Image (cartoon, rainbow, N blue to C red; front, top):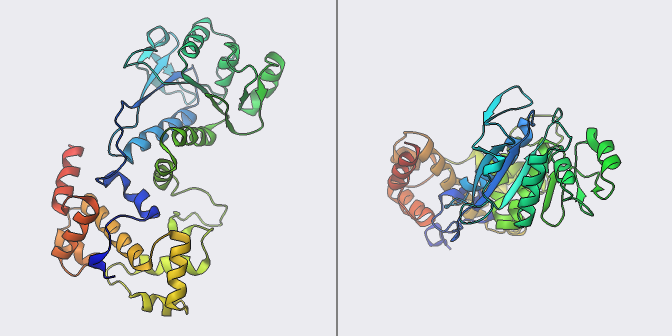
Length: 352
């Protein structure tokens, strides 16, 4: 099968990278899931932004918004974070909407190292009301303590910052304290810190929208994830330690030869392997053929240059190994549903 005959759908790894730009991205017929964050005084800014980052990125990797979010102070319009930065919230607890088209679906309490862990009547009342409306409830850092005060963690597993374990065990024996960094138990999501807040939210998102959405989010957020290596290089598909060394070497060769693509036989010769073995590696580990992956890699590089630079379409075509700008335009439209010039115009209109 020649390149021009290849079906223009991305394989798994490249689909995640390109998902925000695909015409057949996941469409959601209902309104976005509404998430509310209750910010306690001295809340952990890192935990809060990690959780928000997950849902904002979920929107970026889909063609329609999956989430909206709002923030609430207990009784004030500005809340001070643990960094001493004042955050203006959307509203206060008495004005949380729990029903109707504008009602919340998820409500999370954002705690922090210096947050007051004593029972707050207003917060208690808001959480109990949310539970009556069957909202998914959660806590970041020590936000689980507020849920425990409202008796919403009785016989439920929960995660909590280690500094607060003794308090939880002493005051809430009916809550099942976990040693895990985050945990989900029957519409209760709790996490112990910033990194676990992100993982908790990704788990929640996966339950709502599936693994493909979470894979696409990780593609954006995990480029600098620490893999216990001795360097601090950005990680990409070719750096995946779970892939065979030979395949990683092939992926590196492809990445290094975008402008003048190597043939599959040339790639095989560079790594002293047979063409058949190369094809088998790609099919087994990436669920695609080497030629298709190479084309997707080049069209993805072209899409990035198209949307992130003012380079001419003709120059982009050449720099990404296409025979002509016409050939490039046809390939691009096959994958993304619109021409390169239309994609650039659409992107710029969205930014303005």
